[in-house]
Image 1 (cartoon, rainbow over the protein chains, first blue to last red):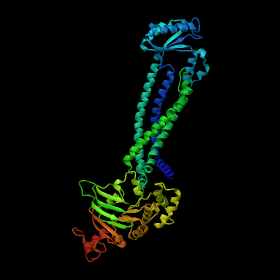
Image 2 (image 1 turned 60 degrees about the vertical axis):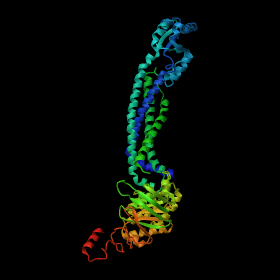
Image 3 (image 1 turned 90 degrees about the horizontal axis):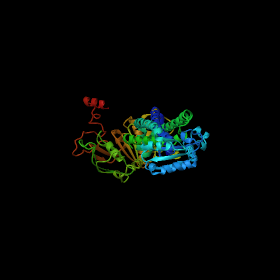
Image 4 (image 1 turned 120 degrees about the vertical axis):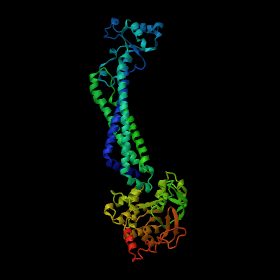
Length: 304
Length: 265
């Protein structure tokens, strides 16, 4: 009975205050979309980093089947060439610059490739043979990349030496800046949303002051009096958060999935499913903000 | 049922207290009028009983419990035991008669079947049978007040507080409302009614507590609106036994006085 009563109170509150409720929905929608966009950029950065980015700085790719580099005259790197390279890496002249290194076989490379490009159609057309084996090196000082490069580029069986950081760092700094901007905009919008929710709840409490006055007099509990107002704000904010989550999913599905991944097939993009891990966070954030701001407003404007 | 022990209430430190060392006991099942001019402390008295305000000093006991010791979580429970009726009815305009009365039961979580059984019964007590589906604006003032009374007593409170319940009603309608309150009192509910309405007080012949400037200056059983006994130490305007101010009704020959009284009325 009490639940049905509270629900009907919420319904009537939402209907009476429809324009304010719609504005709360829209403001939370926009602000949480920005929050989600920042989250999505970070997910995308992680996706592009792949398996090795945070672990190593320099990769020595060994010759594969179709390699044309000078050191690959003999075709695919032989086990002896591999051993020579390993010995060289362990020699004191080189080892002083290195924390440690790992060997990535063709099969490992294929495994990591599949993980990184799981959302891309390219994964189906690649076989382990096409991927080069490599040594992945964790530098003591990433600035000493040149030394490694000079030492190994000319070794037999080495196709190329790459400083992965240099390739991706600039792109990542742009993306990080973009997510910072998104967070700042989101912050401003969230302040807007909180104030708007507070105003809406205040109006709602004012327009129902007769009811709440009578409820107080006949001894309704604080919960029964306040809950409809709080839930009103929370429901509006959760609808906004759901719209934001839907928008992020749509961006991942249609823009990244259908368009960008065809334009840039060699880049790993996040999948629509991955954006859904942001949804509970957005819903939780929306509900919490609305709940807290309604509660604070009611404490000031609704006597119980 | 209600006991005030040396209760003082000060709203504003600079002004005189709204209630000044009031000692008063109203027993279970009693019917008491609270009379006095505006600002004499009647409303403050009612607010203290409801714990809308806390006394500055002294203790207020309601149903044996010191309200100062009731935590804010328990206040709703206190208020469930007290019905309140106001001068301005305070009905919900978009709900019909039945829904207005049922509202008081819904918000404290009474089940639908109990509501369906109880509300018609209470409406019958206040004389509104067959008007369940009327909207408040379709009712006369007296009928609206009856709805308000029904709402106040539907949860069977032990105490009914009425703050000038007949203030907006004509004398005949007022007597009807008094009949309802009397009936509720006969059923065992303690009724405390703040009023200015001398005719009603004189008609009912119940206990009268008179307040002036926050002090109880008279507490008489089966009394009239104005005391026939002079109050020692108080300078007060003389009123005759009918409660009319200063002989205006008794002395039609005095043209000035009757004009003044005509304006007053």
